[in-house]
Length: 491
Image 1 (spheres, rainbow, N blue to C red):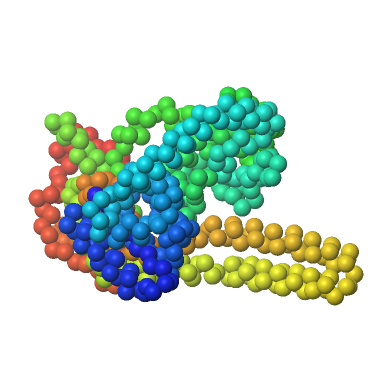
Image 2: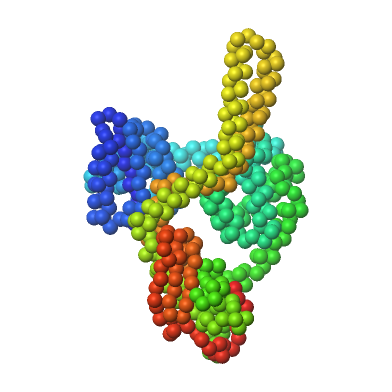
């Protein structure tokens, strides 16, 4: 079972040593129980009488990602002293399949806690049934006026005080980018990978996946059509994209939908763009062929071999990929994880302070300073009407600057060193039989691989020096293409 540890000390008569003691007890408990600790959440100098604690709230939100199944605390009062908060938050965790364990107390909860949770759950159910008809009537009325009826607001929109939909100038460009990428031929996976690398979140604050992206691509509200319970109102919401772009995307989606088998049958070559011939330094790409027995074999071949400019032998796909994955896993030492985390965090920080961001930040500071001076002028009794107009202008300028800063921020990944270490530590414990995991390993850590007939040289992103491995590949290499009945084009 994967678990995380939550530790806390209040400012009263406790110190950092209290955290160390809590962590030590929790790690001992986890080892005895056979649990795997994948992370820590620590609140320092914060009282447990309220659940308004930054790391605590981040932990509750992270539980929805289903990465861990348990939370370890030194004792239950570290989680919460307020029984109501404890019950409410445990109910949230329960819905996400997460339990709270105490390292010191041999009970998961006491009788009053169980009762409180049951009461709260019953109250929620009661009010849900009691108010459902009233809520539905209210939603129907709002829908007849093309107003927001509750729930998450689609990416690209915001809702004003009167519940009207408005275009969100910070996120609407993301929507246009997504539709343009898909219309240009990018796959759903490529778009999701791009968005998640940029740390762009869905309207619900989560990572993008094929389902969330599909919901966006078919949402008619992006062309100004308000939809509710199967009914459509043209012009009910402001438009974000053109009809032409929207229906082009629908056409492509329909074509892709009709050819699922072909997409599934395509073999994925994980080392594409990273594997090179050691002899001529040309890229090696994937091919497949069918033997006389009808069995399909997958290989990597030197591109110059096909042009008869190189005699590098083909190598079996699974063999070389598994070998590279095995070598890659050995790079995930504590030392390398710390090194990678430090380098990536420094790069994120550098990217965040690029010249354009510095320019915008300076403009924002100058705007705020000018506004303060105008307010002081009003206090001194100067021409109020003229100054008020100038303040309004400055406010409009500030809104535009903040919008540009938001767009600039979207284009840069902001990761902290602990977050990167946590990710790499989890990466080290993945399933080497899982294709997604192997792809992630190779993408993150492998820079290039040079393949000879009897050895390979691997250059890792985490190492200053190339790793050279002497290994006999002769038995694994197919050197006679005459055994093929047919051969397919490179993938």
